[in-house]
Length: 411
Image (tube, rainbow, N blue to C red; front, top):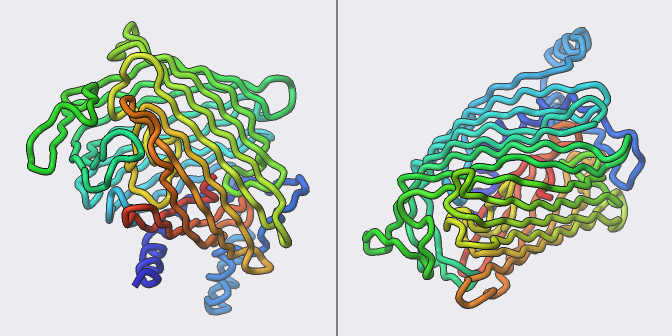
């Protein structure tokens, strides 16, 4: 039953992710030599291999006659499934372009409606200037987002679910500039706004509540976090969708929320994110490690702005758990993953992984380490950009389990 469900969900998600990968196919293959050779076949090659020869020849001729594009626009409807949303319908538009001697810039917008009556409108993407001198990062979201929460700390039980319903506006805009003429070190800053309204919290008896785990701020009514961000970024990865052995990533950020800018109070968030990739056997296999921390400092930040599972920048922490399963005034997370190739052409690969996290309750401190683990497959969608469809099945504690999708490696 699990295997059948996995196949069905993979097919549902494949249409959207394939379009996104095709939009990124304009990115040139890296010229650097490392232990992770670029794939020689992708999903398109597999599809063409089973098409009638005359149709395939006509398509190849048309493709050869077409001039190379410096930009691409893809619009695609699709259906998929996630733990927090269940089945969903989405319309995605992606616009990609590339400036001189720079990484690929991608602007993506998405409109989604879910089985849980969630409505999501999002615009995001990295925008690189020529020669990678600087980088603009955009993350705009408008949500109507009913979801469940379980209280503070990683000792919180799945049986203590509380229903929350709210509207959410996010405006995160930051700018990074490279230090020196060459290299991978950037410093940046920006403005971050997270505001929610019509927040309602309801317990198992259907009664509205105003305090969760002794925490009152942002549990009902409205909340706003508004502040300035300074950050440091060092990224040696040639392709963030498929990092190679010997590469690394480091990100440090301090966000200062101020009442003068409309925030509910004066409080700060500090975040660190570090990743390392090592040689691990033949055929470009990689052993990857990830350590992530998110901390709320100062006066009480709104409940829904506190660090939580799956609410990191790319919503990928905590495979094995529903989004928001663990929440606290701080969250520490670690993960290890072994990545291996299953075919000589590297069109198909696999992973096994394990992760653990601990969230802090302000009254009792850090709770248990909540472990999770699983395995997954990787299907190459574009050999030009080495982008892969990731389909994982993960298990956590208290019966938590599910299928998780991603475009490219999770970290």
